[in-house]
Image (cartoon, rainbow, N blue to C red; front, side, top):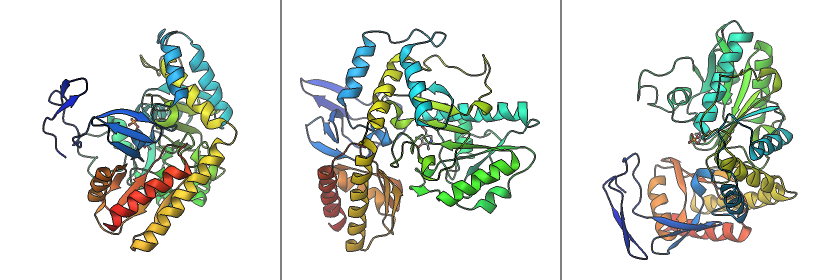
Length: 400
Ligand SMILES: *Cc1c(COP(=O)(O)O)cnc(C)c1O
């Protein structure tokens, strides 16, 4: 992998070069041309079983009929009347999301980071109006909330505090599953606690249900808002529609992204009525709540909410977790962590990047959030047969 320019030859003959792209990441010399459910195909029609799925974005797999049809229909009907006017898909999606969750109000954005920026603004506004100007939001070591300046500051990724200094102040860091480390940071300026119910980029580290309950109690005791960043864990990924539902607590604010649009850029900020304090002029965005992306969101959320969908997904997810555990036992590897279709395998050594490359050569796409662990994020409608096939490929790569 490198950032040097590469050229691809496509069929019918056409040359495309990477030379005009900003080299923001190093990528393998592969051009993906199409996808079908669990599978991706490259420029030479080699196929790959995809357990990255656009970074946990394609909840229904690649090019699912439900999304393709909804987008095509909406594109031919109305793409964007502007956020200053109502449109039917946005209203329908907002109603679906409030019906499926404990929240009352929705604001749509285009990326997870944008939804989290909105959550930060909403909490700061609430603090100004209801808590004497309190504005600090306690976040967590190794958390990931996005790549805008405020969300990078809220993130606890090592090195991110100085990368584009000065950072946005007001995000003291506690440790996940350590309620005392949260309590120690609470002061008069504290307005909220924000966390991922499963730290995804940190290597799939779940917050314990007990910790979620203790956090809710702490927030109630101190009059703080509980914000869950469910950009990765929401929309069925962990086996319930939203990950906060595992613990039974009700947060005050939630953000969604990734799976919400079934692959199309779409995010959401949700709030309970009593903390939904934005007034006209406080929040907005040119593309926010556009009918094209919201139509995809309606199709995605209807599919996830269909009777039996999440039950089926949970059982296939368990078969993946069981298979990973068997593999770990047989090959002397480490823990299997996570929930639903957000799983990680600890390798016990910093070999994950090499495993990712060899798996890709073998036709399996996986991801290494940390050098010592692999992450698995298949489509939520992947089949038991596809899981078995992927486990076979992974076993051959790890054993080889
Ligand atoms: C991916 C992710 C984000 C950022 O979403 P973008 O769409 O890349 O801006 C924020 N929070 C969590 C937990 C994520 O996994």
